[in-house]
Image (cartoon, rainbow, N blue to C red; front, top):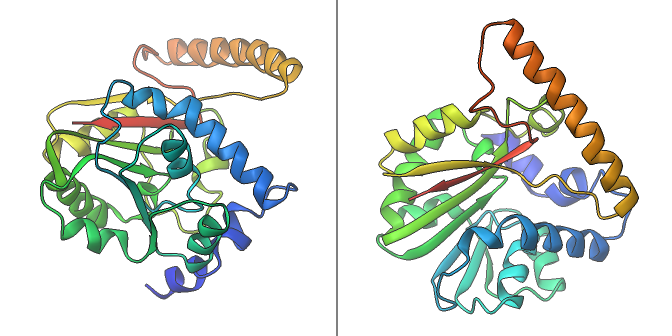
Length: 242
């Protein structure tokens, strides 16, 4: 599709770095800290020698968090030349420019861990099913895939879901489990994404506001005869598929 060629050629300038008033280095470090809190605990106990692939690695902030924590076999690929150049400037190693989808298709039993941060929403449904099947086949026995994607059950979910013109599909926890299981994964768990503000005072206020919002949403579900038991409230969700 031509729109992808146009938008991904300068994706950092027009999207991922556009909304922030901070410089690239500060934004990169903030993203790295976010990944260290949100994603690295999901692979706790895994070997530091695990073969890790970050699909659509962007600026490489997750790769940098992995590499700084001793994961020596972590590498990534992104289709945006601007993003790959930024990763290089930030000192991230083992980043290549290329079509990560085609690369994954060529790999069989290759990875212990595959990451897809903020990427699976960029594929059409047909493309996503094809991708997930190839990802499942690319994992070594006992391997795992970890994705982060917008959560459509979140309050004002359109802020994340529709905030990027290149987004093609939207899911909640239930549909995420459905499609992963249908594509060959045996075990799929979905967790809330990290909601956190580094300023301690703002974080305290955020937690209080979150309690109020969640209560109102639970009351709404109750009023419509639905359960909130399996509903996630965070703007993003983390999918762990094995």
